Amino acid sequence: MAQVLEFKLPDLGEGLTEAEIVRWLVEVGDVVAIDQPVVEVETAKAMVEVPCPYGGVVTARSGVEGTELPVGAPLLTVAVGAAEGSSGSAPSPSSASSSLSSPPPPSPSSGSGTESSGGSGNVLVGYGTGAPAARRRRIRPDRLDRAVVEAPVSVAPVVAAPVAEVLVAEAPVHEGPVPVVSPLVRRLARQHDIDLRRLAGSGPDGLILRADVDRAIRTVEETAAATARVQAPVAAVVAAPNGVAAASDAERIPLRGVRGAVADKLSRSRTEIPDATCWVDADATELMAVRAAMNAATGPSAGPKVSVLALLARICTAALARFPELNATVDTAAREIVRLPGVHLGFAAQTERGLVVPVVRDAHTRNAESIGAEIARLTELARTGKLSPAQLTGGTFTLNNYGVFGVDGSTPIINHPEAAMLGVGRIMPKPWVHQGELAVRQVVQLSLTFDHRVCDGGTAGGFLRYVADCVEQPAVLLRTL
Image 1 (tube, rainbow, N blue to C red):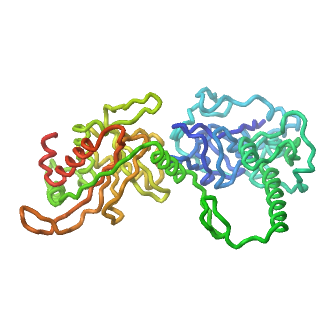
Image 2: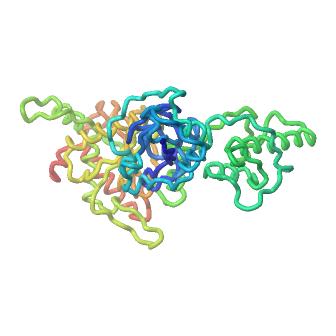
């Protein structure tokens, strides 16, 4: 007899509380193996494939692509044992109901799942167990266990059955607990001021589904629109929340996922950090010549090519060793400056999903070649959307090479809760006075934005001047190697 188990969106780590469904990897009726990825979701920090801890037949999915679900909300249900075939007699409706009302299996994150429950027992935090994905197989509908087909499932279906029109104002008030299971339905109702006690649910036993809440929202909106048409003509241009005129057909893009996380962090940085910026032009001709010589070297000792970003990163770690005030954070609650012992160097990377800042761990212990290899590895993961939340957090200082966009200068916004960020513009030929003569040199603009609480301008200027000296005379860096 098949047992129907509900798989909920697990805790993905790093304090994440919700995720958006990007792509379903299975369909209803598919046979899935234990720890097979079933859905791809986007959190505020990364794209994640979520594995299912149960093996069996998928009987229902909750949420369409683009839906945002909170942690703990139902993802799908799996009929454990239904994939073994239709041998034996079909269970009675009463046995099907009892299997659905039985206590749920241990939480996937507890690590106590057993083989008898059809679960893997592996912790579902982060990226799952890493087991190879099983080949998808669709089971014939006539071979599905009748308990799977007929039993009510307490998740919101993808397509709701037609029901009678629900009028919020005229519906009777529920007595006792409101028949709602999904946290998403409750949150949607709160956001639109819908009283769930006045809704008639279209699900089994009067269960209120998302379709019921959506229908109530549309009813309220249509009523409000009709009232507005009676009271005054609709203007072609309406006032936006910020007071700026906006066309009525203006496109609205939700701030969520990576874009939303970036917006929150930048806003918090500008709100909390009293930042200041200083900048300097530097002659990078010698640095470029040294890099060319390093990459032209041959023989057994010759390593991989070294990028300009890797050299600048190594210069930053040397500068932070001289000016540790900038490798810090501010504990606002304790009113203390916390100087950090190691340098975890973040670097800005632009991807199709938005701006991300991967972190090179323990950059102060690495040479330019090692830093360059790690930057290349993390950049590739960023482009494919496979960075883990741990690879995007914990930075202590950020290097931002906006010169790749063909711009000379910028005033970077500090990556909260760090204390400073070094910005690097494009390196290009410019007139420059070199050894008393006017010459064409490779010039770059360096910008340092710093938290004025952790240091004054003298320290920030000293840091930036040391970086510029290393760019102009790479031999300066050799003293610290």
